[in-house]
Image 1: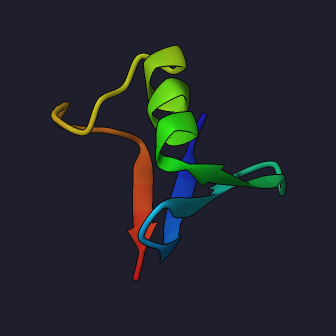
Image 2: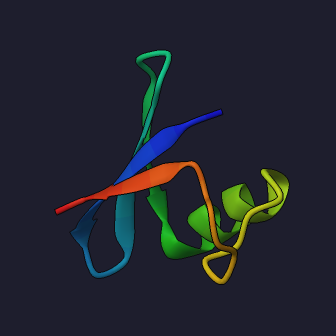
Length: 52
């Protein structure tokens, strides 16, 4: 599943999924999502984009 991230403040990130859904997550929730998806920020080749 592909998604894009948009940091909206120091502790919240919006996650936009390719199917049109989006969620606003705290850093802790984002970490949980990354673990669930089997991803970490240290991994290379992650299927996500950071919106700046």
